[in-house]
Amino acid sequence: MYAQPLRSSSPDIYHGKYAASLFASGEQGAWYDPSDFSTLFQDAAGTTPVTAVEQPVGRISDKSGRGNHATQTTTASRPVLSARVNLLTKTEQFDAASWSKFSAVVSTNSAVAPNGTLTADTFIPTSGIVFSAVVSAFVNSFSFIYQSITVAATTYKYRLCVKDAGYDMVQLRVSESNGLTGSNQALTRVSLSDGAVITQAGAGNLTGVTATCTRTSDGWCDITLTFTSGASQTLYFGLWVWNSTAVTSDGIKGLHLWGADIRVANESALIPSYQRVNTATDYDTQGFPLYLQFDGVDDWLVTPTVNFTATDKVTAFAGVRKFSDAAAGSIVELSATPTAADTTARFFVSASSANVASYGLGMTSNSGASGTYQIRALTYTAPITNVVSALFDSSFFSGPNRVIPRVNASAPGSIQVGFEQTGAVPTKFGSFPMFIGRRGGTTLPFNGRIYGLIVCGAQTDSQHLTNVERLVAHKSGVAL
Image (cartoon, rainbow, N blue to C red; front, top):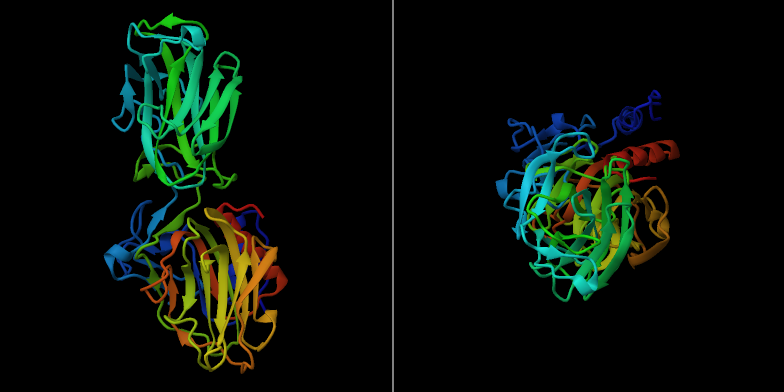
């Protein structure tokens, strides 16, 4: 019987008590929480604590109380602790070299930003440049600024706060060309005087373009340009200075800029819409979930042998974000060969399966070549963040009860059976290490994030199932 947690107003405390009570009766397993710095170490021995984001994690301690700590002895194969979602750097420092400027200069910390700090910069076109939004009078000498980023084939949000500092119009522009021209473009033109979106358009392989603008009483326009990139490519994110009538730059007037942010469009809506990034290791973490970043190449962790031989049921919970469906990536697996056909049951959870947009969940529970049972929870197309949970039950030798999956606290709308054994012999789970992020440390590398992982050698009741899923969702920024 599970102990009943005390109610608390804090999601971490209240739902965390449910996670802890999964192991109250001696159940085997592990609980990994990347948001808990006290459990993170840069080395496998646990002597050098992780003290900040973007440090490697050589050991994450098990919070279940079972001494099943996940470690990595090879320095190059350690995942990294991160909370970053904004792909830009120097997001409040437009004078920095990472922002290329053409026919313009930047005056730093020259205006009060939307957050009330003196951190907004002013982008000033070179004196003598003539420009206008009126087509017949358009003589733009390309006074612009940009930062380049390599993107995947998915949908992005480009967000920037702009204020009139002498010119009343701006065009946010994304292009495959460093001149902010070219055949692949996404753009929006916005009136800074009233916040109206004048135009929004896409061309080439930048499609699905939409734009929004929210204007504050003090004149700041919070502009978001959303578009889909049709390919993995380097894109240049920037802006052009415009004006409603033809003007000649005096080298003094310009546009105030602040808070540039580019992120994959389906990053959690529960996190702040802007993340300050200075450098790759210096950025805002408040309000942004912490995660272990696995590189999809050689990052992985492994536990000591975990003895599940007393149980025929295992429940797993994982908060994950996968970046690709091109190949299966191992999230967690019991043993280096989780699909081996023998008399001890093993389980695995993977991101993607058979190169389709899915989560793969499987188990082995009999001897013989037909000893694998696998289902695919469809369709969850990368990049995507989900809470994936499942009951693995080796006491069933036929039918769907052997693996019962849930995604975001619900049964998947579509399930596909990949392999199903026949004539299975009921058995207990085996005694093996658990591998995280890579099968056996050699194949199926996971390309994505793990926000939390809990594995318990028992079947959970509905109350614990619901509350532990809520805990993992809270850690992952997922709304249930």
